Image (cartoon, rainbow, N blue to C red; front, side, top):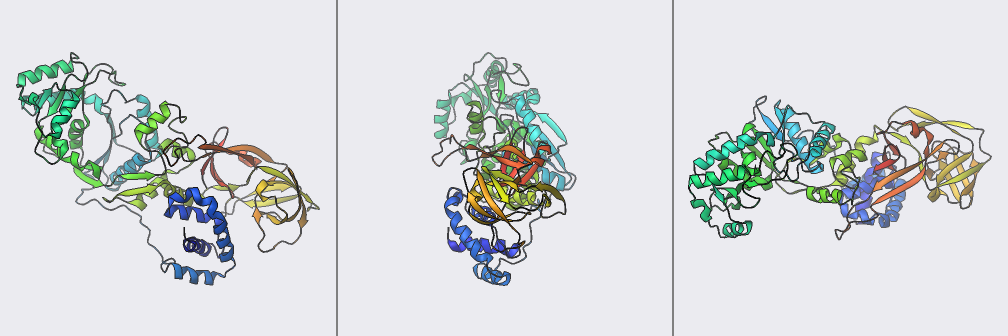
Length: 560
């Protein structure tokens, strides 16, 4: 990281805050440009602090002048993107969209962005939003995931008009397969997966495709009624073996799976594959917003609809998948981490699931703002979680109350203090609300702040620290109200403090993709007694520490 880049951000921060920059405010900006710097922040801090000190000595006009030399557009008034792009040729009030979770896992931030996108357009164009659980995989679908998905969607502020489950339509899928079989569009195949894969690579149609309709129906009935074991027979589509699109090479439409289904029990043995069900179900809606990686499957699904004599095709709005950097989002990986006990559950603070992010204190509005900032594009879109934190920080900054917290507290004894005082401390720099804190010359301060010299107890008075011992610090009250360039520190009164612990989540995996054992750390210290009376779920900013959210017996660190 070049010093010039750091200086640019320091100058920007100073200009925004009447000429005074804060070192802690620079870190998110640097991480926003390069998330990989997270591991180097500690080594960069001395340089950041040095530049902040230098810039803060300058007059505001001089700061602006230098900033414009580094970035000529830094002071331009930028138009904020308030909306996502319109959808072409859409009819207001006559459109529909879908939310298609597979209840095999809990939702992660990538799902959240996609579902928020569908919710946004459905509301924008006064259309219908359909919640459709794609639960035709008996092995992995669970009621707990259905309940969890709905809980997450509601927490994100998403509302839908209709809800249904694909597994409830099994009899309909069977009839559709019967129709395709009688029309000669599908065939039963008794080859093993290795033989099918080998034929597909050669773009060679399986000899099973030469079976008569009667033979195919016989096999199909044996699949439906449980006579065939798993892997003994599948139903394949007669696709197009000459097509350059590999998904068209006679894909499997139904397979045998005798696992007891969470919703249908043991009622069905033959289960449809994704493309078969989606081809039919997507014909019920007008617009499908989907990852551009699924472009190949659009051709297949259109083909299946044509074979089913379904003339209506949805409009496909394709965009690049949201790749999330800095968090675990792969459903299979998350499920394994939960099942093996590596993490405590789907709301483990180290995950990027919706449950974990909401538990940490990420606002649903922040996810929507992130979506608007990123937009939809067919270009590869990689989103650093730090960008989400930056947006969340901006939203929280003006709405949460501030309190003092001291980690590794040591007692500061102030000699000759004023008679017991009450200080009116602002709840938030953006409001007129205050809280009253009483003091008697005894304070708890951070051990890191316990250094000989002059300090200012924020919102209180100046103290010159004379003596530093292991657990007790001695200082003298300094009457002067305003002294320049004095470190301002937070504190907690000795009379009214509360011992708390704050859990911070670090990256779960290291650079070698190995699980880091110490990825959850605990900060212990004293907070103002007032926070004991705050409701569970309250979010605050512990000054000079972090934004945090209250739980039943602890606090969790949202972000710095």
